[in-house]
Image 1 (cartoon, rainbow, N blue to C red):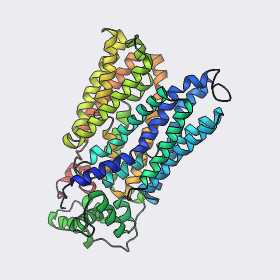
Image 2 (cartoon, rainbow, N blue to C red):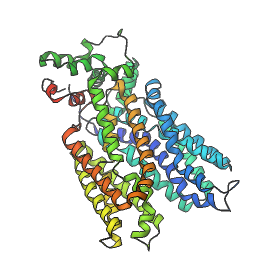
Image 3 (cartoon, one colour):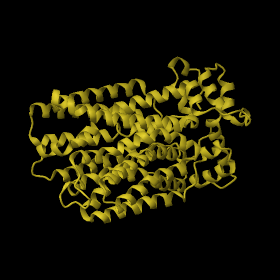
Image 4 (cartoon, rainbow, N blue to C red):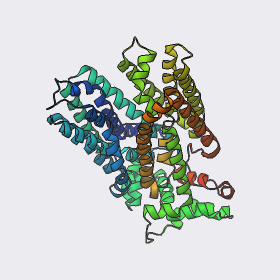
Length: 492
């Protein structure tokens, strides 16, 4: 299939559109950062609420967003396939508007906690953002643009922290509310994904969408090629062809190059569940994504974020631990932005492997330092910042990029929901078991365990994870077949 070159004007349009779509993840960063600098206000006797928050209520305030996200995630796949990428993204922005509006007018402790939990329904929309961005992006920059669903979160964290340091309680709320509304308004300016439009049989609208995102003239040859390419991915027979192991590569290649010759409009389309159950490549891709997601979360980053302030109090006692935590968020953001630049140059597999190995080394050093204190205190801070930088240069971002690009459109929404559910469950489970394990084994040995997970992740990436850099969804599918069956597949 002919690959069209990315035009400069298309590059800028796709980047600008990605920044708008990724704002949903920044809104998630707002709600995660907000409790950290309002805890002192809420627990004091001078609180602006109708009563001070208890320790249990403060703990719930900081964690209930994850519960809301987990509850809403199963509906994400349904909405993205039912209402489209654009309107689903707008729908998942509404909980943030409702959250900040409720907090702005309420003094009730329970209503505040409810509102923060409601924001979790918006956080579940990260899967929608990933799908939307991947479907409007050129293959050559898809990895970098999709990675904004990670770096956007850190932008939201830093922005909210900055607001908390300079603005009053209510002004912070009003800014967050305004930006949540602005996100929905800006989305209205974008076109729907051409993949979804073609799924719905709206070829004219799909052509207009392609012309918008790729800056082609309407009714041009380039648009015909793009529509043909998308139809190839959407045709139910493409999966059968890729998995059939047909020895006649010439015949198979002809079918792949002319999807219109074997597309039947009257053929009843399968549900996402039916397609996933019979598709070997989709099941293998989903398994790979879930393994990578579970491994990367189990590398200890989320625990390090939770335990950052007490660790910094030990490592840098002369510095404000909150300032150290903000610098840690800066570290995360810089690394994720650099990762976005490297993904489409060096590939997913190599970045995942190298950063997992380096993360394993640094967690080993951090564990030994916490265990036997063999180095000066500043070395603890060095390990924390070094690990955070290395981890976000690849291991933290790769799972989200893979989730957005390895699935065919028929199951993209469903499999993204599975991936996000895995993320929320692993986040919750890791934090739940962490404190009991620290009491039993101590903090240092726990980081030895994280180090082992890092090296296991590197091994899985090196030996089992295929490279997907620069490939379209239909070209990625044969990579998830068994090796003995890959050899008879033509390159798409």
